[in-house]
Structure formats: structure tokens, C-alpha cells
Length: 333
Image: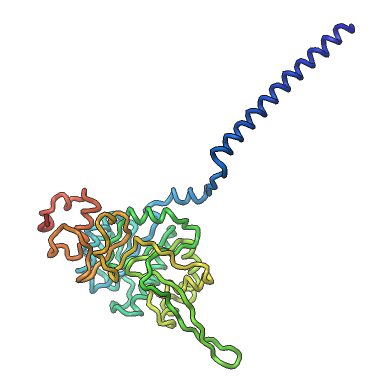
């Protein structure tokens, strides 16, 4: 009996020894792995999974594109847009004008909105249309609201790529400044028994270059548009539409959000010839005026005075009229 007990004890000791060796070996492996990780990755890489998910899921259909125009420009500016970049974003682009035009309505597949605002290029007309642009955006429920003028060329793939870098669930106001100094708005308020004046300083993105507002920020502006009326507020402040947008963003966010400058936005107040050809692919918008166009060889200026047709063929050479240049006009070699 005693001998069998000793054998039993010896067997248990052997099992414990084997178990101990196993645990020791496991701990040794963990120590080695930790040492290896520490050697080659000293600090962990932070990953915001929700942000990545939002960025990866962004598509062109998540963007509401509005273009401000007028009946006075229906035969001059709109045709070149409809022939070029509109073809890449037919379902996402809406035109805000001031008169019914059945031909344009047909060409845009019903995307012409008659705002019934004045056709005059003045503060009331601009603010009136901007208010309708915002209201239609809010109905769309999309992630981004992007405004452009009818003298802009929009590089659609680049627009999508840039917006993917920003989270629409956060407050973002993207665009291009039109001046070297911020706007100053003198406000008066009653301080006990006398009126005092103080300056509100803010930046705004010029509408001529285009700007984009995230859904999170657009929601914060809802009360101003819905309750007070954007047109009435801007008229009372004597501000034009794009300037007023910048002021209201500053106001509703209590100066926590300001314009984020994105170099790819351009308006005709810049010298267009300064944009070099090798950087065209990286630009979001281009603009033009009578004596201020991009420097690009292409269609004859009599056919393509804005240079947008030539630009479009440079960016997207597989379009039909780019392959068959004679169908649209004389091509400069």
C-alpha cells in the first residue's frame, strides 16, 4: 500500500512538473512577442473605426450639388456645363434659376428649380436663391451640401475624393477665401443706457469658387433658415449670400467653426493662368471671365471661349466629342 501511494505521489509530481514547464514556455513566448512588438512598434497606431467607415462609404450620391444661375445666362453659361461636368453628376446636380425653361428642364431631366426669385444680380436675388438651395438640400438628406456658380467647372471625381477626407458627422465648412483679411461686421447693442458698437470678425468662402458644408453643420443652421428666414436675416445685415453663410456659421457655432481653406477651389477673382497644367487633376473647381481663363490648348476659342470644353477633354479624353474633335469645332494642335 505504501509503495503504491509513493508511486501515486510521484506521478502527480511529474504531472505538476510538466504543467509547470508548459506554463513557463507559454510565458516565455508572450514575453518574446511583447519584446518584438515593443521593438518594432513602440506606440500603437490610433484607429477611429467609425471615421474610416464614414469615409469609405462616401460616394457621389452622398453629395447634393447646387448651381446658382439665372434666365439671363441660360444660353451663355449653362450649355457648357451641360456638355461637360454635368454629364458626370446628372442625378446629384440641381440648378436654381428664376424662370421656367422647358428645354433646359428636359436637358437636365427635371433638375431646374424655378425659385421665383428676382433675375437681377443683386443681394435680394442671391440670398433668395441660396435659401432655396439650402432648403432643397435639407430635403435630400445627403451628407454634403456643395454650392457652385454657373461660371464654375467642377472636377467631380476630385470633389468626391476631397470630401472623403472629412467626416460629414462633424462640423466642416470647406472653401476658398476671397480676401487676405477677414470680414468685419459692426454690430450695435444697448449697454445699459447707451448704444455700444463691437466688431464681429469672420471668414467666408466665396461662392464663385464653390463651398461645401457637412450635414452636421447644416443641421445647426436649420433654425436660422427655417424660423428666421435666411433672406430676411441677410438683408437685415446687408450681406450677400456667400458672406452671410460665413457669418451664420460663425454665429451658430459660437466661433468654434471657421472656414477650412481647400486650395483646390478657384474663382475668377484669381488669375486662372497661374494654375499649371500638371496640377489640373488635383483641382476641384475652375472659373472664367472674359479675359481670365485657364491656359490650355484645345478647341478654338470661338467654339470654347471659357476653355471648359478643352479642360473637360484633358481630364476625360474618352468623351465622344473629345475623340471626334471635328464634331464640335476646330481643334488647335
